[in-house]
Image 1 (cartoon, rainbow, N blue to C red):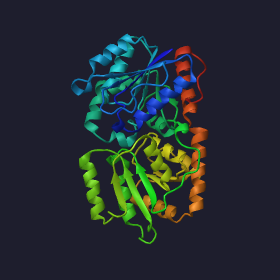
Image 2 (image 1 turned 90 degrees about the vertical axis):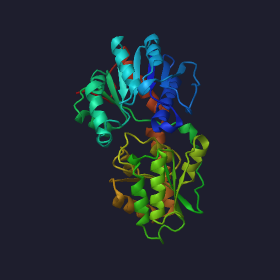
Image 3 (image 1 turned 120 degrees about the vertical axis):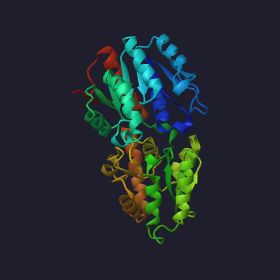
Image 4 (image 1 turned 45 degrees about the vertical axis):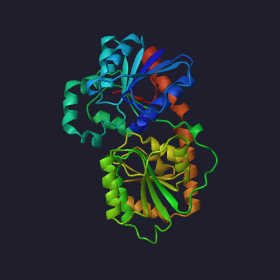
Amino acid sequence: MKINHIISSIDKSSGGPARSVTHLIDSVLRNSNEIEIILNTLESNNPIITKFDSTKGSLYFNKKGLLKYSRPLDVKLIDSDSDLFHGHGIWQLPVYQMAKIARKLNKPYIITPRGMLEPWSLTQGQLKKKIALKTFQTNDLEKASCIHATAQMEVESIRNLGFINPIAMIPNGVNIDEFPASFPEKSNTPKKILFLSRIHIKKGIENLIEAWGLIDNNLKENWKIEIVGNGDENYIKTLKEKIISENLTLEIEIKKPVFGADKIKLFREASLFVLPTFSENFGIVIAEALASYTPVITTKGTPWEDLSKNNSGWWIDVGTEPLKIALEEALNTKEETLFKMGINGRGLIENKYSMDSVGNQMIELYNWILLKEDKPSFVDIV
């Protein structure tokens, strides 16, 4: 069985999907002797990987032309002799190329929207998205053999748009082996609140700055917020100006992105992780924080109700005031209680979001589509 995955970029600057896709492929290859995988992507300056560990995995970087249309990608897809195509992300030409070629070759294909059909996402760049929906995107989605969502919330959003395809709900996973099982030593001088993600207006960073500015100075004494990530330089400049205008320069710092062991070190040092986002289909950084024994505050723009169910964090409404209330509650929480919440979070990831569990579900999905095996329980059919 040969599967061809397509994603526009696996550059370090491209955010969570690049990690999610490459980790998923690694897991599928590790857990199946019957599957060969090709990953096709566009050229980038700083890819997160340049090859897979398994000899059954191949990675190709394709040159891009006008509007990121890649003629070499067309050739690779046509010549790949793949049994199934799996595209990640929408609105992007490489996935459109994949869908068009799959139909031409009469091959099944899966599309993973990666949150790009969520209500908030659809309000951004509305004109371009309306044009894309009319010209190709709706057709590509409607003719997919299956749509892959990473949370039940995303399944419901896709259904609300009228798509009647089978939808597989398989979460993103975390390679738990990358995150030490030993209990971390949390920073105490000062205690740290960490935001680590792509720095983008969608992430609600302004709400975090405003909420922090509303908290009593005595309560937040000996605490510091670190905002770590990459993004548009002009936007980062506006955030720095906002921090200055709120008189918070000694309490909030914006830092350049880190990767690998340095990133995990930051997760483990933090006493609290905050992602005040407007919308996420999953939020891989939340899972990584939990794997690092760090409680999380995030919004109902993410599918992380598990935080409340497992007492590993706060799942709150979007906005400055709910965030302020949650931060105050966290700052008032005893250190040993935060420690127990961190242990709960680690257990949640081990039991529900391990990479092997996710990889095995994807294998089950591929077998259902190609080998006509029994429908997996996580596939929704209308």
